[in-house]
Image 1 (spheres, helix red, strand yellow):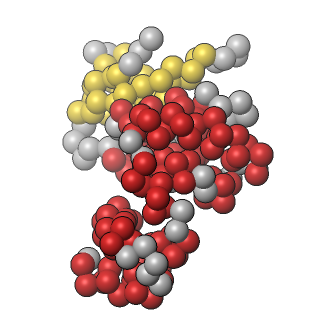
Image 2 (image 1 turned 90 degrees about the vertical axis):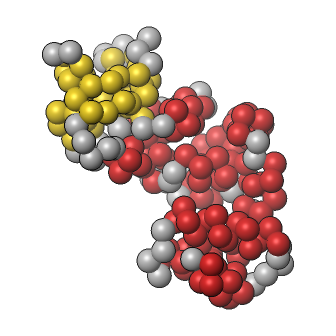
Length: 193
């Protein structure tokens, strides 16, 4: 099993890259999050997963081990193949997927193209315990179910704030004020961003 590739980035586009490793070019399928996280220089290390099908051997590449682990968890669910898992990781960060699963948020998972209600429910049922144990999501699940939190994050994103920075600030505010209104969360967040 190929677990990582270190080499020179020869080709790069949003869905795949070619990494030259000692004269051999490896084609790796990637998510948009991995594409965004690729280093600006030519030298790259990608963590990989080899998907073997009857008609093809497909190598998937990830910038972080966490993204690869979430990918592996997703493809372990019946009805979720590598393409859908990659689409999920392109639509959301691995942390957002973990939070959606931990909080049982079917709507967030269903918002990904190609995932219906039943598949979203199956993802949550199959992976919730694994995600909670592996990534210690007990604290996160308490406040990610909060719709005010989600709406405040969306509003901050529309205002042009970075999603990850906003999440840290909003999570802290919601933890201290679990019953805060959307307006209050946004106002307090704007002071801290």
